[in-house]
Length: 279
View 1 (cartoon, rainbow, N blue to C red):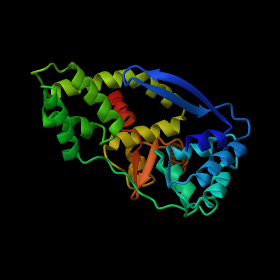
View 2 (view 1 turned 120 degrees about the vertical axis):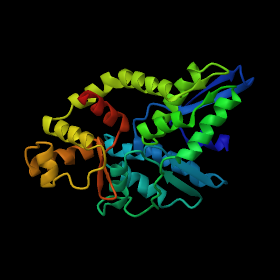
View 3 (view 1 turned 180 degrees about the vertical axis):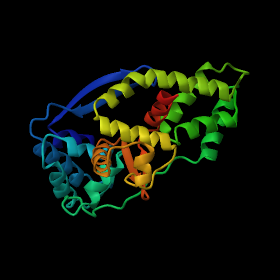
View 4 (view 1 turned 60 degrees about the horizontal axis):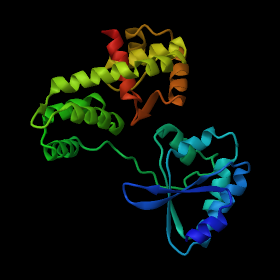
């Protein structure tokens, strides 16, 4: 397999090293300077076709193909993929709107070519059991209410859960218990740490778009109709057309998301920061 791999992919760069922890040699293979993406794709899929094993190909953050300078990447991929007979593919992405556009728009090459699977947040009970287990394993404790506070604050988003829980684990000494006050302190510290990035993100959008984000944050819950007269009057928005235009751009920027007919602020950290600015 390795011989076939290196013989087939001439666009690769490889380097050998040594892992002192595992006491084993390492081989680092990565793509080199690609000047002809079409040829490199051809090489990759030729290797897959020639391999005598069933392959599973997982492409993470697949929506990034829409931002490549080449305009025909989706069509090129679809052309190669449709001829594969010994591989299954998983296209994973964090920007749901772009992923849906790629796979459910009749004008796109991947239209209806894959089964959609939505990955929901890990259930709270499962995450509580996981966190408590690892604290106890290290001779520490954490209140289940403290885990719930992190989970509810960040709406189950693993990225933020893991960051706060890692910090909580680090500052909790053996024999001690992490409580909700400690967790709240860590959340506040993390919010201050991320503030420059969030402020910069907000500076890149227009005033009407900012107004809509603040209005969504003030609601404190998903909004069914952002163009309803009651919503517009309550938050002193300019007009229905202004709200529609702002929402369209915020959805494109993935600052706003829509699911099951409800609008949400896509990033719970951004939502938390917007709420803190009103206090």
